[in-house]
Length: 165
Image 1 (cartoon, rainbow, N blue to C red):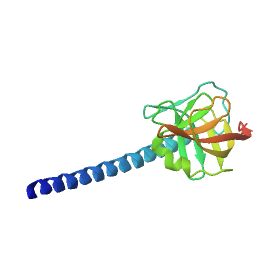
Image 2 (image 1 turned 30 degrees about the horizontal axis):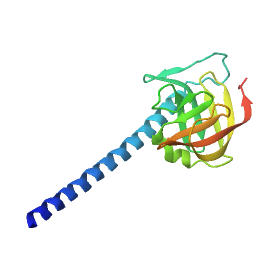
Image 3 (image 1 turned 60 degrees about the vertical axis):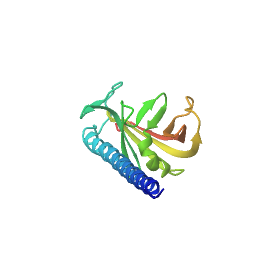
Image 4 (image 1 turned 60 degrees about the horizontal axis):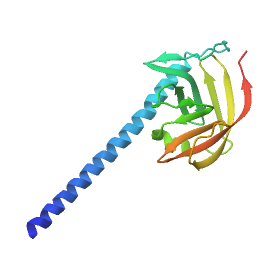
């Protein structure tokens, strides 16, 4: 009986070590993804023209990523790309990867979001935090972040249109 309890205790300790290692790796991956997106933001920002250049579906190829725009809210600086591992467009919405959920949840009502497209166009929005929703809307532009089986939603209210001309 004593050997069985020692075995169970050993297995329990092993499970705790494995879960700690997985948590640490998850935290490392999340921070790496945020850092990679911020690096892409810095590289893309340097290449965006100061004045608007008319072009449809323009993108920049940076490190193998198709980048359509940069996005900034307070301290958050992201790129909008083509891949699902980056913030990306879907219908009128901006879909944010689940790894960035904490940053999305830090946003507040009336925060200002600015999007600079690679053609030089600048679009400004005011945020309206909605919270948890079950599905994406196709009628109102919004920022969505996957949160388990639902989404964290923030409506985007256009406040200014600038073409930098």
